[in-house]
Structure formats: structure tokens, C-alpha cells
Length: 295
Image: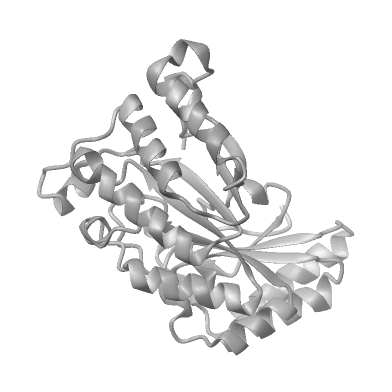
């Protein structure tokens, strides 16, 4: 193996062919009750030195492997300062001159102290895409899951990203509000997206591979998960409330029962028809079985 990773390492599905460059380890926030990605002891947040990153890039360059895309891992590499991010992008250009796109996960808080001008410079150096896990647009739900963000902080970050020329890929977690808060979770996320107008939007279904106890604490034990039909109804509410100009929409992650793909709002009616068919006549549409689903 050319590069050494502190496992586990996660990346968006669309970065399957990218070089995963681990510039940080873990997540600087790591308090979200729905996320178990970085809770292992070895995933305590840390930052690689510039020397370590340069050495890894030298190994890739010496291997002769053609690299066109790079994903900066782990959970929120953009927590690094503008100076460090610029330094990393320059190292990528130095050793891997054929790279056409660099991308990263991004927490809204990561951009609080970065200016639009700084982000514009990073975009010009190759940082073309940020994956922003907003999860919800409802402040009450965000508070209950200890996200550490709210509607306005998410919107401020997405606005900065758009103004800089960087593209954003935003994610919502279907079912995050449970039965009690399902509608406001979907409606307020739609309002957030209508204001932000991201280039990409995707949905995942909230899952609890190691149990729901930690998550339940924020809800005072009052969290009732959505069942399959409830998830479809929440999706219907979300799609119906979205007013987007040209956003690529994907609900095809392995956690979803119903695969949806389109561009909003162009394909809104078709997508709503698919969801309503799943609700009212599920035998007429292909749904994933439980064994076919995953994280």
C-alpha cells in the first residue's frame, strides 16, 4: 500500500475513483449523536504535518499512477486554516499536476472564519467541491442530535461556498426527526435548500448500526423511528416543498428503500409520482429489500 491510513476511512460514493488523501484524522466536532464514524479510540482528531503529506504525494507521483481527483479526508478537513489548505493544494499541484478536482467534507462551522476571498483562492487552486452534511434545516431537530449547527449557520456556509465558485453537495438524513418531528424536519430543510440552491443534493436514511441509546438521549427517550412508509411520506413532503433552479438530486444511497434520481425542479413531478406510487401502490415500483440496504 502506497499510503498509510488510520482506519476506518470514509468517503462519499462519488469519490470512488479518487485518491483519498488523509490530511486529518477523525472529526474535530464528533458530537453528533447519529454518527458513529469517528468514535473509535484511534480516530481521535489529529492533523498530519505538511512533511507527511508531501511524502505521501511523492510516493504517489513516483508510482506513475494517474490521478485526476483527490478527496481530502477525514471528516472535516476544511477545519484546517486557509493557510494550511492552500499549502496542501499547492503540494497536490506540485506532485500531481494532472489533478483536475479536489474535494472535501465540510462542516458549516469550518467556514466561519474563512472569507469568500479566501475560499475563491482555494477554488482557483483546485478545491472544486465541498460535501456539506446539513442533515436537517430544523433548529429543534439539530439541537436534539447535537449537530452544533442551525439553519442560519448552515445557510451562511452554503452562501459563502456559492459566492466563491466552489460547488456544494448537501445531504439530508431522512428520518432524523423521528415520528414527532418528521414534517418540520423535511419542510425546514426544503426551505434551507430553496435559499441555498446547492448544485447537488442527496438523501440518506438515518441508521443505528451500534444501537439507538446514544441518539435517544437527545430526544429524552421520545424518539420513534420512521418505518418504510413513513420515510416515503417524509420524502413526499420534502420534494413537494423544494423549489430549486438546477440541482442534481440523488436518493440512491444503499440506505434508501426507494432509488430516486433527477434534476430539480425539472424532474419534480416525476419524482413525486414515484414516491406516491411507493406509498399507494408499492407493488408497482421496485423497492430495496432489507438485505439489500446498508450504510
